[in-house]
Image (cartoon, rainbow, N blue to C red; front, side):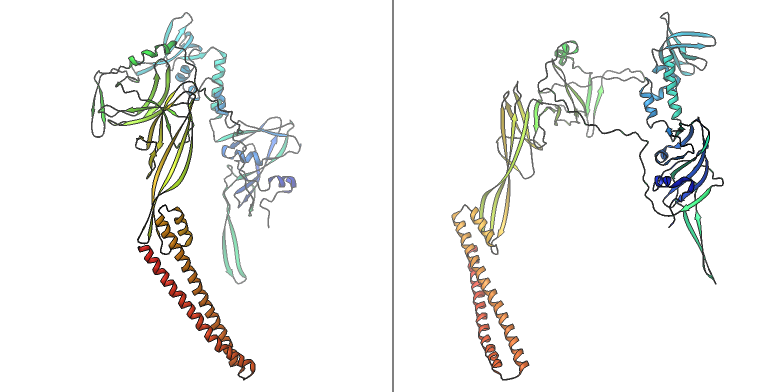
Length: 632
């Protein structure tokens, strides 16, 4: 079978070993001369080219999608044996360049934006021989005859402020060399990114002498295909294969030696160019202190006692409809275009709704600090973020309030009380509540009992009142503790937590379960199980009698089965003897003994049949007694 890539002798066996089974992609270069191309049905092309190496780098523009393939497969055939190396910009070069600059990429694409981004920089502005120097104050807009005009604001060296029309005639120069260099670096980054689909690779060697070298690489290529023609002649079938070849190398082929190969090789897509960062171990999270130190009441916090008094709102008229609520500000609003206004439109005092809340079943170790908000208005309250402040302490947390219909209540969390720790333990048991025998059916009423114990460790320095919510489950009811408040999806209790103490709260739930067991054909293990669980002595005695009758039924069934099996065995023995007597056909002593045995077997078969009939009659009698027992 031909090689997938038949290598020319000049490349040598070492190159064949290095390139075997490797597939890559690269466009051809103006600085190289392609001599040979080998196409494979594996979708690969091996390209052989010649190039001149000297003290200048050889620039090879590589398609971005193909750079990994190029880095993996390029082979330099240098007659001088010099060490070759490749250089190129990294995949994050553009972003890296701007990470080092105080400019964003968009800042250097517009003069006005650049001047705004460099506010404070020393500049010189010049128009038709008139020159102004000073500090850049940014660019603003103002009305003019053309509509809106941009103005460069400048603080002159004498401190005066100037506004200079930023038109095409105005030239601006950064007088600080550092600023000019920053702009130059930003523009250079843009220049390199001008064609982000291409990476320019520079090939250098440590030998400055001029010589011709060979380059070999693999690249992805369209699969070449075959179309056959056949002619049936007198000499036989003449078959002609036509190759369908596509040149997708990026350059014209000029007297290129073309080789077509077929076969299957492993083609691995390498990941050599993209930036790859090693995974690092994350440091341990720092636990917040259970009881943070009180904030000093200075500055803004010193005004917190008065925060409740500042909850004024604009006068608003509200009305509610079937699908929406409207809030109309009574005072007209004046607002310039492009500006934003924020003003209070609703103020309402609600009852103290703060709580320490723990929701069972979620696996949390600490309770939440929550607000229970009830909408007392005949209007819908719109959804939004809520920022909570504590009078005298400051910001307590944020939460999200959903839209609340009139009278609706919602509990929202805004913090976690890490000073309180809660652990849950759950166990399930079954308890028999009632057992009745009705017309052959054993009616068993059981309670599946689930006990959830909450072990609550109180805050070390202060007491709490904990609201515990235990999730409601379908078909379950709470038996202990009593006086639970029911919500849509939970049972709720209020629990006092003294400082530094551990409180245990156990919730017992019950799920009734009714089972019906037919006892007429119940097996002995089933009867024994329910006999042990029965509390009623009369029912227990009935189950015991029923078990005894079933044991007798099993014994009688065993006797009947054995008698039937024995009768069948005797019949087979009798048939065998009769067949043997007929075959021998003599009056020998042995045959006379066989005839006697045949006659004796008749009596034995009759005895086994009678035994089976007696056992079956006993079974019928026992089943009748069982039926009478179950009916009674």
